[in-house]
Length: 145
Image (cartoon, rainbow, N blue to C red; front, side, top):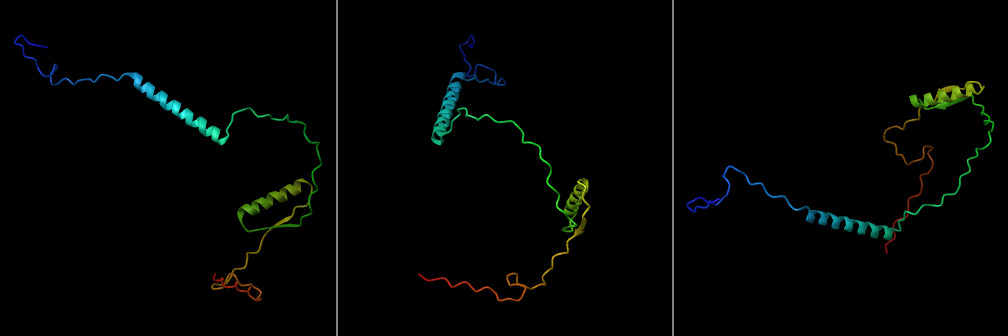
């Protein structure tokens, strides 16, 4: 844009107009993507060969779909009582077992909570026998070599 006087401005646009950059050509980006894709495929192929991976269909034997013949249920063992820890989950499970026995025509066993385990007094060692027997022998000292 030249004026009649021969003055040529440094910028062809007014200072308030921003210059829009031209877009890049897509071919170099596509070429880089293709190179990376081929490189990844080559690495995958090499790793697959090194590990012995294959995608060949397996020879699956034919399955026999015949069901086993129907059998009579096993006899229920005689139970007089069920002793379980005094926890809600185990008491509920024992009650379900008692209900199943009644369903099979057996008498209902009594569900009783187990006695709590004896607690040790404070300060007792855990490795000594509770009956007062002799303690186990001490291990031999390590040999010096």
